[in-house]
Image (cartoon, rainbow, N blue to C red; front, side):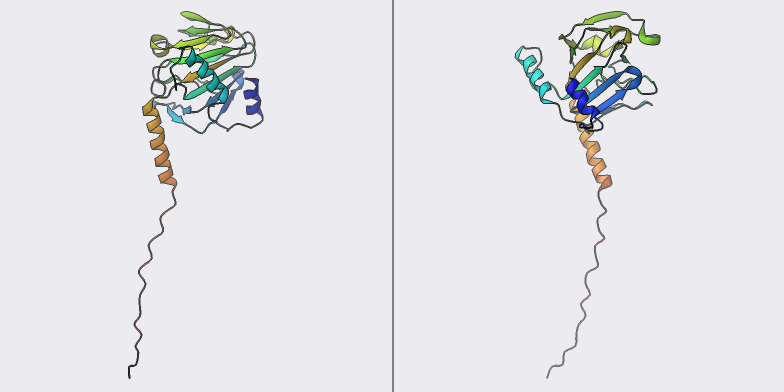
Length: 226
């Protein structure tokens, strides 16, 4: 995971792959697909201007498939959250449609059902943390339910937890460097919309067809016949 951060810091990844939020002391990496979130009522949409899913994620996926934890050919998008130090956090979000909570940098995170199938898998690395539900208040100090996220544990989120209640990782629950690897499958309709938008964009930016030249005018040359 430190190697992923190093690649981002040295500019070895595509610009859209890495997103660093200073206020949260967190780096986020998108692989396979990312998403565009619209602030005023629009639904989020996929973008694919990010790096492909790394081989180490494919190895992790294979291990989960072999243990009957994950179905084959599931992972189409991966997000790596890197919490660099104590007090890092992940803003409140909900999977019903989309959500965005504003800081001077955005808490950009979406579990939209319009984009992602259920369940959502995640792996906790480096240190333990807590996934909190029903979070509210300054610093997300108030919550209704808490689920421990032990180092090395796989969390599977679906149904009510994924769709009906807000969840977060509170800064108070990050005590040292920590990381999560989220693995999702893309909704077929979301990929269709992406392809349609790409085709539309290519059409809009295609060079104008040259105007057909008028047919040549053939002048008849008079020839003296003896």
